[in-house]
Length: 248
Image 1 (tube, one colour):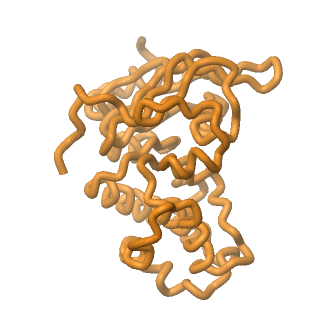
Image 2 (cartoon, rainbow, N blue to C red):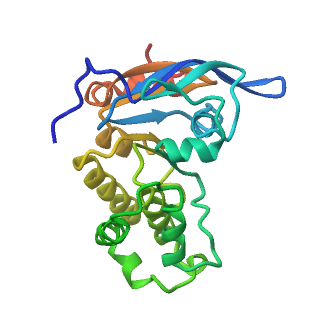
């Protein structure tokens, strides 16, 4: 698939976003953009504001200031259900599958907000081809799956909404290296077919290998941004932005 044209208007545009928990500022004037067909990584240590930023995009947190636009439309004051219907799907940290429901029922719930019901069966089959272990577990309760299988289900459930933008929060968290590789191989397959993603991930190497561009957050502010290839070639610069250490 052709790479996103840097001259096109972004699908997601965030301008001057500020988010606080009471008196504590979690996101401090963040501006970023994601273009259609692009994978953008959001990197940073624990507490940098990455998950807060995703939760604000999906409407779970209201910002104190700034704007969030999806395809030119302001969404920062909309309810989460409305944001889902406009085309943003959020695969949260910790997977949060419906443990008492079957894998098949979790997938059905992922498609609940879709206006266009045609093609649901085909979409499910495509995702089961992407995550074949889920096909073997369709009747099994989601809570009995392994951590890696639950992460695959969380991704597939989000994708059942056929989103314009997929928000991914720490998809590799707590998983064995072989499972992490399988998850990122699946994400690379999604990238090849044009799925737009904003990825929060502490596995810097895997994130930069997948992403087209990246932003590094520290204490709620963007400290570095650039093409992933350029950032991979300058690890000291990433370390400085990430933790405030190393060369500037």
